[in-house]
Length: 329
Image 1 (cartoon, rainbow, N blue to C red):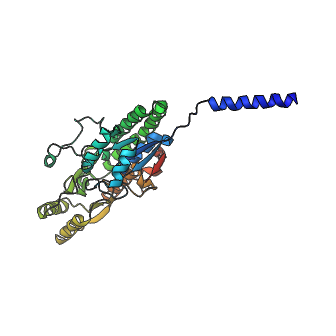
Image 2 (image 1 turned 135 degrees about the horizontal axis):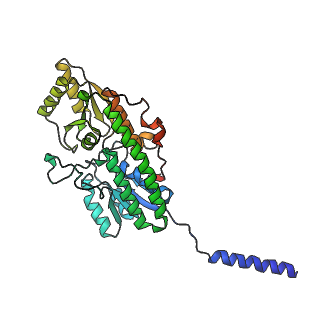
Image 3 (image 1 turned 180 degrees about the horizontal axis):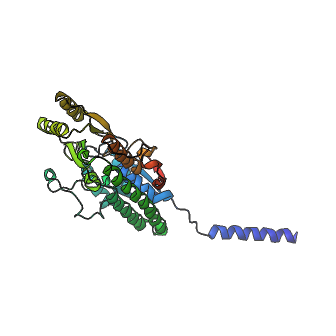
């Protein structure tokens, strides 16, 4: 009997000790990201410590996107908000300011990119070209900015965020090198990329290809007849046989180029559908930032006479394809 009482007392003591030990289980950080590109790299850095929700899905044009009441509620309810910046999400500025006034942590992921790097096209006086994710080396700096922000919010897991960022940046470095090699394989006189709008200027500068957009930087601008005729002459005079459509922009102007070239006896085909302001389908390789850029690089190289491998960067040993953390869509 004395033995049983002793065992019972020990058991109760253990229960008391366990009850008094503070729990280390924490809820994942709730993060809102605007575009798919921002959401994807945030997941890579945050890993299992965050649930990342993207406001803009597949094929959504951020230039034209208008936030809904549900978006505004999600933003002010989140622990952190990441957006691209450089006026890409111009219509959402007021919502970000409101969230910041409420004490929310709101971060533009492009904040570490030096102004000397940024492009300022004449038609966008006072505004930078926001499409910096088209240069993989520049978007790597966005990864670092996210890691810094997460460390401010969650110091306990800072080392893990930094390690995740460095690991992911190594993959991006390999992708950047793949882009340089693939675009350089296109015959020099055919290195002209004609697309629906001017989203590829940083891509062109980084990888050595001339870029011509039918519309301006923003898809809100319209291409005139003179613009179309000028581009038809470029196609015919340079014997360019491929132009490209974009996932988030109407094909109408690109089809007008093809018809205009045909009227002058020159055959031009659609070289492929590129991802510009939005990624591919959620849950697929093209629905990741690396997959998006890989698709663009490989498609452009193949259509213009380069020798990028048929399966692209994804099947190369150095690709080390990314594995995301928690996500919601």
